[in-house]
Image (cartoon, rainbow, N blue to C red; front, top):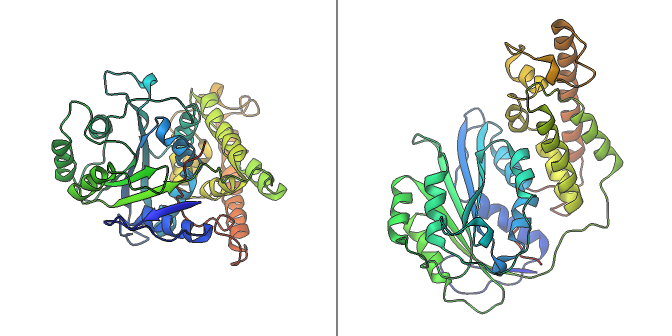
Length: 372
């Protein structure tokens, strides 16, 4: 059960059922931007700056499980969105005290498979740690390579609890720097019970100072992941077929394959609905174009030509013995297969009954819930 508080007030909203929660959080995620026309490229930098200390145990799971819902939400508004996501964590002793126990876990990137793989290397639950919010925001601002230009939408979701005034840095000055650079900070204060915590006032002030939005969330410890029901054989088969269209051709080919397959496995282990969200995302233009620097199939679909240089030693075992003409022919067949498979997957989701639950129909949502 998750309860939310109205923005700008301390009045408790009624308890929401799962369908209402998903719809509300979809609105929350997309509140900060107005979609451009479908033919116009939109640049979006989305950063999750999250408290990973014991007081918010479980938040990490929500970010890494629902990355695909987040991406789908933006891409459904405009498939040409140049979406980059980063995750910055703070409050863990293992991050080291030099930067205030802050760590850039994943850089701003459209390479979400690699980001997801990195996130799953972290333990979701740890012991107590020091929370220095000013340090977290400072490192988020200075260490990430933000998009340039006035047209870029830059959003930070600061998720945590505790005082925002700890540490040696001046929070007001940092917020002023965000505002000058048109980076909005949406703050979500996580409380473990229904009692209003006085520390939430600081999160509200950060949002106001940076033209962001403020939210409070009362999260239960219940893990809502349903692991009892597995993915359908059709979905698993289509996912495997889609994976077979990849032809990694760079020196990090084995590493790229690991990111792809391990991310599939990690997400499926966390819940079938997360896997379905990821499968739908894998049919997007955003996903395939992010693979163009590493995958011949994606490169061909994007540029309709082969790269200038290909070292066959990095290709799969079946392609190593082929000449360049045969490699191109093989890659073009895979490119056609990828388009066909993507359409088949999209059609499956389009046929889902409208009365199904939001998680079954893959509404573009981000649900925050703390669990242990």
